[in-house]
Every structure is written in C-alpha cells, then in structure tokens.
Image 1 (cartoon, helix red, strand yellow):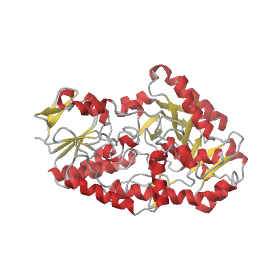
Image 2 (cartoon, helix red, strand yellow; image 1 turned 180 degrees about the horizontal axis):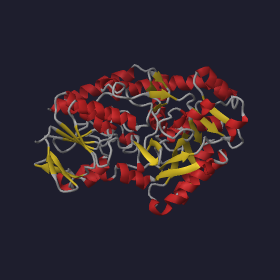
Image 3 (cartoon, helix red, strand yellow; image 1 turned 180 degrees about the vertical axis):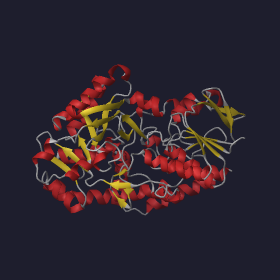
Amino acid sequence: MSTDAIIIGGGHNGLVCASYLADAGMRVKVLEKNEQIGGPASTEEFHPGFRNSVGAYTVSLLNPKVINDLELHKHGLKIVERKVNNVFPHSDGNFLAFVHGRNELKKEIAQFSKHDAKQVDRFFSDIEMVSDQIRSVLLETPPNAGGGFKDVLRTAVLGNRFRKLNVDEGRVLLDIFSKSVSDFLDYYFKDQRVKAAFAFDGLVGTYSDTKQAGTAYVLAHHAFGEVNGKKGIWGHAIGGMGAITQSMAAYAQTKGVDIEVNCAVRRVVVKNNEAVGVELDDGEIIESSRVVSNLNPALLFRRMINASNLPEEFNRRMANYKNGSGTLRMNVALRDLPDFTCLKNHKRATEDHLTSGIIIGPTVDYLDQAYKDAEELGWSREPIIEMLIPSTLDDSLAPPGKHVASLFCHQFNPGLNWDVHRDKAARTVINQVEKYAPGFRELILGQQVLTPIDLERKFGLINGDIFHGKLSLDQMFSARPILGYGNYRTPINKLYMCGSGTHPGGGVTGIPGHNAAREILKDR
C-alpha cells in the first residue's frame, strides 16, 4: 500500500516530523539506514557493559513545545541538570567554573578579573535579548524569497518586531550576526581566560578560530535553550541522547508510524517533477504521495537526486553549500573517575564539578592556535576538548564503580584522510587530557573514535558537519539551505526537507521537524 509520506532518516527531526504528520491522520513510514533510530542522537554500547551517546551528547536546545506535544516524558524521557554548567581547567592548576547563580558566577570570574565580573550582568542581558529574538522566530517558517504576497506580509511582520528594538539592542543584534566571537566578546571582557570560556560556545561545531565572522552567532545559537523550564542550563538525558529519540519513536508508533531500520535509501524517485517514492539500496521501490528528507541538503541533492531533475542555478548553489565541522568524537570506558589537577588543588572544587562540561581550552590564544594547527598540520597538537562524564549523573551507562566519558574534540581538518590518521589523532586527544588529569590514560578500558569521515559514513554528516551545514549568514533563516527554498520545500513537487539543514539549524531541537510538518500539512 502506498503511504502518505516517507521520511528519509530516523534522526530526531525525522521522528518529530513523522509524529506531527501521523497526528494529522497521515500514513507515515520512516526509513533509517542504521540498525537503530536516532541518528547522531543515539546511545550505543561501545565497550562491553559501557553505553553512551554517540554523536550529540548534551541537552538544552530541545524545544519545550516538541517535548509537550509528543509527550516525551510520558514515553520515558527524563532530563537531569548538570550541577555545574562548565569547568575550564588552566595549565597553572587553577580553573574557572561556570556555576549556577549569577552572583556565584561573578564571584568566580572576579578571581581572574574584577572588571570582567562587573560585565557579566550586561553580557547576559544582551545575550538574553538576542536569545528572545531568536526564540520568537524558531517555530515560524521563514519568509520565502519570491513566495508571493503572504511571504511579503510575513517579512513585514518580522521587520516590525525588530523595529521595536532600541538603538543599543539593534547594535547588539547586528554584532551577533556579523562579528566574530572574539570581536563580540571584546565589548565585555578583557581577561583571556574569561574570554576563552565564553568564546568556546562560538566554536562548537565549527571549523574556525575565534576571529572568523559568524562565530558570534554560533555563540548565540547555543544560548536559546533551556532544561526543565530553566534557561541557560545544560542537562543530561537519562540513558543518553538515545533516550530522546527512543521516546520520540515510542510516541510516533502510538500514532501508527511505521519505522524501518537497516533500510538505506539510494535515491528519490521523481516523475514529471514530482517525488513519488524512494528506491532502497537493495533495489526495492516504495511509493508514496510525498517524500520528506531528514538528510543534510548536500547529501539529498548531490547524491540522491539526478541533477537533471533540478534547476541549473539550484545545482550550482548546492554544489557550493558549505559543510564542515572540525570535530572528532570519542567515548571512553573508565575504570574510575579522572583526577583533574585543578579540582584536586582547590577547596572550592566539589564532586559536583565532575558533572559539568570540562573544557580544555584555557585561553583565546589556545583556541586560535588549535585551528591554525589543523590548517597547517591536519589537526591540533593541543586540541580543544569538552569532556562530559555522564555516569556521574546516570548510573545506567556503566557497571558499578566504573564510568563513561564523552570527548567532544575540536579542530580536526575535515579534508584529511582520517582512515590513515584516526589512531594518531585519538592519541593526541588522550595525551592532552593526561596533561590536565594525570593518570587518565591508565583508566581507559576501551574507546570509540569517530573522525569527520566516520561521522559522515555513520550519520550522513557531510565533512563531519554536526549542523547539516555551516551556520553562516548566507545559510540561515530564509537562506537555509538556499534562498528561495527556506520554507522546507524544494524545486521538486511533493519533496520536502525537515532536517537541520533548514531553519533554525543544528542542535537537538526538533524544530525543523515541527515546522516542516506544518508546511506539509498546509499543502495536503
């Protein structure tokens, strides 16, 4: 029987889209190439008895409306908060912690710069203003260039919102969308250690240094989230990130969604400029009234659709769609907790600090040198590393007394031959952690290493791009992925996009899937 909609890719946005379509009465089939659903938001056993999130590794951006609409908590999702947001070890044995509570954070920063501590309120006031502006358009379909009167009206409404900003707020908003994270932070902070701590979020998922324009927006992109109704908090899904997509799948199946795994799609079947189904790797053709892609746009349009079915100018633009994160992702099984020198040396450190994101990136110079190394040498010789030890919050991930750690590592050139250099790069990461936590190497019982090419092969993240495309001004909002197709539609009738290569971009948000479903239902 032909279905009403085929979703290509069982990642979180595909499951969200499928759920909303099924809620509206559609017959929906989700096709996932891997042996389990979830895409990068999945949990695997990577060493006997040790489980962890494989790609995405932390919770904050998952939209509250999606959580509520899909009844995720009812279907097993439980999110707990980190007891400390982040810790930044320093080479001199000290550390800077992003603790909860504005006054406590200012006290922490004052140890390094009294000037910077006084700027904290202003910084967060500006970031919250920008976040509010971003939140106000998250669940909206961007106005589409050339879309007609409705899109002109939508543009006018959007412009009216921004018109309400005062001049100072307008300047900050312009800074966020046009400046580098380094230039933006210069308005607030002087101390290189403090500035580096804030700059880190501007580099997450990018392949750049702090000086590249557009990284200020990446900082803001990571600031609009919340956990359990609390803004600016990071959390952990009990059971790993796969718990999110498993709860989504559970809801979808209650609505009749058919989910098939180990089911790779080779191409979209197009007839008379209309998507009519898909062909699987084994040659089977599944017919459908519409096809919805949860894939990176470059993967969809360059590899699954014949170029002759697309406009020449669209092909030219898509050929230059920018992908690439300098990301290497590791999981390690540990016989015990690591012993960070900085946490051992100072009385203000507690066990709570081990629930945080422990980020090795102590100064702005360190962050920038990491990118320079990657460009010149292939990967950073002192990489930027965010370590999470989720087993400090979730004892389901490791045997009693043992632990798992996620290592989210930055500045590994996506263009390198990683089949040759994978093991050496992983040793570089472990050696760098060893400098800050002596004995770490001896704690390792097993590990999983995913380089940019591994992330592409496993999850379809082109050049390891965790956002499904660079978050730059020319690939955002109405221009994501390409101006004229920012409304989740494509040049081919009945072919839609619902992945992170559409507005509002990457992160485990569920928003692209939510918005795409609304547009699909409008066209029904």
